[in-house]
Length: 282
Image (cartoon, rainbow, N blue to C red; front, side):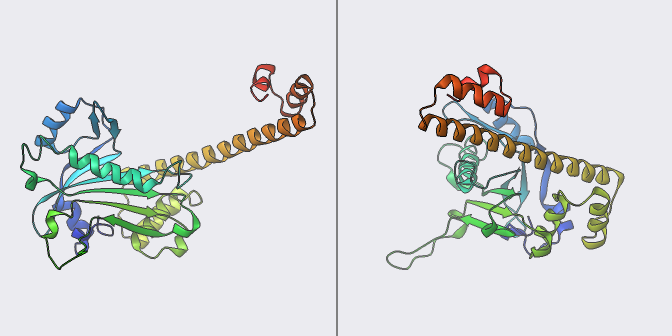
C-alpha cells in the first residue's frame, strides 16, 4: 500500500496497518451467492468472490477495505498474488487486472450505492505480484489508471469523480537490482535460492521486521511453496520439451513418407510410450 498506492505514500507502514485497514482481510474464503456476498459486505467488508449469472465467478486471493488518510473515504483494495511462469499466459495480464477492477466497481451496486447514487462509488485497486516477468519488466512497479485529458478546451473535473480504479503490476527480479524497499522485500521473501533462516535474518536486520515463531513458520512455508512452484515449472518445461520432440520426430518421418505403423513403433521405443499414447501423435 505504501509503495504502490498514492493515498499512502506519506504514511508509515505501522500507521497503515494499525489505522487505515478496515476489519479483517478476506483471504481464500468459501464462495457465497451474490446476494449473500452483498449483504455481508455491508457489515464486515468485501468477500473474496464476485459472482454474476452472466459473467461467471471471480475469486480474489485477498480483498479488504481501507480508509484513505486524507479524505477519510473508504476505498476498496484487492491484492492478487499470482505465481506467473509466463507474464503473458495466453493474454495480457494487465487486461485481467483491469477486468478485476471493473468487476469490483460494478459489484458495489446494492452495497455502496443503489438506484442512481453513483456519487457513492468507491475507488478500487487491483495489485499483482509477478514472480517471473520478462527481463524488460524485472524490478518494476507500474500503475495503470484513469486520467483526465482535454482534447478541446481546458476544463478541470474533480479528480475523485473519475479516478475510480487503478491496476498495479509489481514485477520482481534479482534482489541486488531492486530499486525500492518493496521490491527488495518481495525478492527476499519469494526467492527460491535463499533458505528460510537466511530470509528471517534479512527480514529482521534489513527490514526491521520482528521475527516471531508464527512469522518464522510462515516464512518457512513460503520457502516450501516457492520451491514447489519452481519445481513444477521445471517439470512442465521438461514435459513440453518432450512433447515437442515427439511431434517434430513424427513430422519428419511423415515427410519421408514412412508408414504410420513404423513411426508408431519408433516413437514408442525412443520415448518409452504406451501404444495408445503414441497413437495420439499420429
